[in-house]
Length: 272
Ligand code: FAD
Image (cartoon, rainbow, N blue to C red; front, side, top):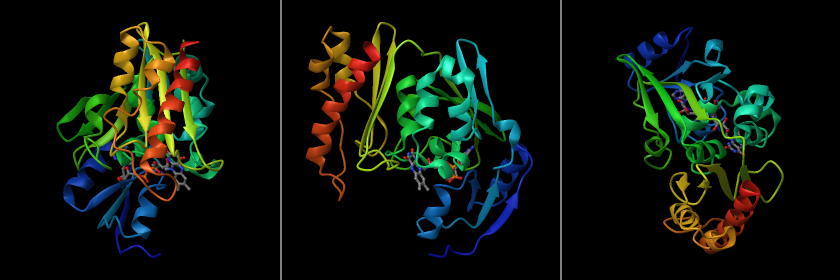
């Protein structure tokens, strides 16, 4: 598979990236390339120019900030997995980073690329949704914050404007109870269904991976928990409001049934 012709520019600052995006409507940012390049090879994406931000090292960090962690958008999965600070503050992020794809993907793929790509089957968007993360976008007018609930408006769509760079992701400290259940047919596969559960404010936030056009909060489950339901009872509402795909890996019915099992397991682990 050969991508359509494109121009290439490596930039050395966020400002230069924004200027390059503004100069060419068809330009796209390139971070780790592990979602964009496969799309280009299939000609699902045909950017006129790649603006390479992959070497902006000052956007690769994890640091304690406020009551949680600030993560640079260019931080690679491998570095998330290896971060002691993240393991202390928000272990679900480091743990799930270590379960994305294979070592090559984890050494190249970035958390910001995963968020901007907004794949409903992506693990990190779902985890960040459960955590209620805040996303920091930088454009020509400065920076703005985007709440997790607003970040994924549609299939492969993020709330970022075409000329904005996602620069930072902020997550709350959440070390007291969490679980990510990723059901795969084979080791290193994408999630057939995934469930993130994070204990928060005496209850749990729950989100679903690959159960619709976007990562989803399991609103029925959260409502049941808030009303005092036990994990098994709350899990029965796992697929409420979802629209799981049917494909050669599993039917819609199978995914609905699977989501209930995984939500129960996730809640039992997170709330134990
Ligand atoms: P890129 O491919 O460089 O970019 C992706 C998109 O985001 C592009 O549209 C780009 O313009 C935009 N973008 C990138 N960075 C920014 C930014 N800072 N601001 C604004 N826009 C930006 N993912 C999973 O979740 N689970 C898996 O199990 C999994 N398995 C995989 C297996 C394989 C073999 C491969 C190739 C990929 C797999 N992935 C998986 C996807 C992987 O997580 C991607 O690396 C990640 O989704 C994209 O990150 P990236 O840095 O490579 O982004």
